[in-house]
Image (tube, rainbow, N blue to C red; front, side, top):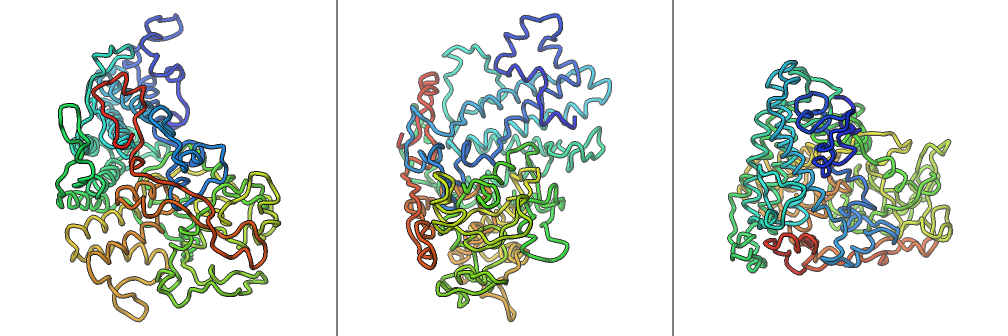
Length: 583
């Protein structure tokens, strides 16, 4: 099955939504849908289609807004929907980045597979029931994952369960209400637990680990999705959010629980610890010990042992091209905001507001290049993540590293191209391969799980020593001082509130540009505080005048945008579904 997770078979090329009519015709050279589930290869290809709904989130300028419409990154071009969303140009009649129908198609495909794969004669003859059970667990995991994706974008959803809604379902068949968010969580957690109880620790064939099957569902993947889901469910947006007191189904059922429940944080911490306790994953570290190289290669080094859930086929080479400067034959399209630049710590482990090392005055000669002191003495993750003015760049188009200039009249500046210039005066460097090497897209990794665990533990057991332990493991790997005792250590946060701030700050830096920030600022209910006018250097100037904070772009926000609206077309068909608040 090595290639079935990249390419689809003839069964899938016609689209699952049309399978019924297609197979009713039974051409001489095709097989019926019933026969599909009696043959091993055809069933494997059907399962490959279920996998195909796993998102390629690297398309952050066209298909997803999780970075380009948060406060960490700006997509420079106005032709994409990221621009419209940043200006609140969305309605129930024009839902941008609308994934509602797509995820439900994935759910429907998974359910059909689960309900029909039993009794596959070729698999039973060759592999026995074990492989059928594994395939069903994979489909069950994928179905649960698609429900999670729906919930993070739209809030409470319709849970269909094991029912198969036919392609030609009547209006009466579609009259299902959204379930309260907590009930959705309970259902998905149960499904993930069921899948995890069957799935192997590592991808395998006939019970034997196989590198060729990398990317298939594993126990760790199921438990990692569960950990993130429970972290979200414990957070302020969902846990006792009284602002949604009137968000109810037509029968009066509240969709968001109005009572804060601290035990949700315990469930989240237990779920994260379960992933850690698998002892299957470890924090990636550069064998040479260089923390900048480590920070760069967490995502660039394929199949390293920190990755939990990856997508093999992706558009990361386009991500590279969009992040390249024009000097490197790129498009200058992905510009980190000044707010994100300022979030990185100094080399002493302190934020810029507290460190004596930070300066916005003067320049330092670094290997013959004049570097603004704002960018000096920063932590290693900064240098692995941000391309700033006069930082060195190397790509396949260059014979040697060159300093990158974003001055208005410079080789990457505004005057040199009508559209391809960064509005913030920065480009993203994280997960950017200078030679555009193909690699897996990492969707879940152990570093996130450590931070999930520390955050959840701090909310219900703030004196637990594991909070500091796992927060410090991230900082130690990053090459900056830890919290604790000793000559280089920083003071331990004084209380739960201070620790929360430290965890949030660490999470912002460690997981920057990995599609978390959009959902974090929403679940914490701080989106209204951090969105709005976002800053950068003055790309309309040259020389010293460039190095001044100016408003670079506006990513607007209003409370309705905590969740996306459900498309009016869906509401017209399924009249028991209530619209999200504010739409």
